Image (tube, rainbow, N blue to C red):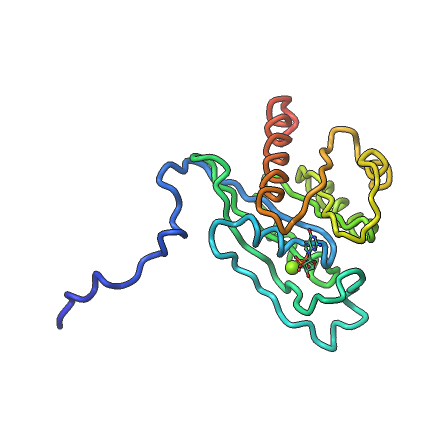
Length: 206
Ligand SMILES: Nc1nc2c(ncn2[C@@H]2O[C@H](COP(=O)(O)OP(=O)(O)O)[C@@H](O)[C@H]2O)c(=O)[nH]1
Ligand SMILES: [Mg+2]
């Protein structure tokens, strides 16, 4: 048998390969209610083609999936989004976008396993959809930052008003973002990394 052709078996695409300088990797989860922009954020910031398990919303989801505020949304994430970003030459983040719908909560235990931190995406038109998510992160001891995804027709609040409305302690960073913009999504991740660093420095990271 002729194996001469075996060296032509395609390896990983160059853009998907980890930079050779990478020394550490961390798992980060992007959570939030339905339609807050999780898939958009993982897609805008990922340096590899994001893996998304989107499924066209079916009749069965009507009335179950609260579609308020994103009427044009016809796909929903059923399991998760996955992406990767090199924050520095040495540090690589693996991003997991997790569904906010209550009927997928059974998936969460596995998804939070080993997560260093989380980004909670919030839509100011529907603050209440984020309460459960934040409660669950607190229960599991996963530190998080809150990113307000600025939809054009969403009411704008002062960040401190939002802190009160979301019942967040003063130490938890809150920032505004546009999940569609790579630089903005990257800023959110940098804020999370700085927050995790400060927790580690004060010994509060478990
Ligand atoms: N104007 C605006 N639209 C956004 C933004 N982020 C997401 N969207 C739109 O909102 C809808 C829901 O976003 P998606 O990422 O699918 O939400 P997910 O359910 O949290 O994954 C999509 O139609 C996006 O194009 C944003 O920052 N600004
Ligand atoms: Mg999604």
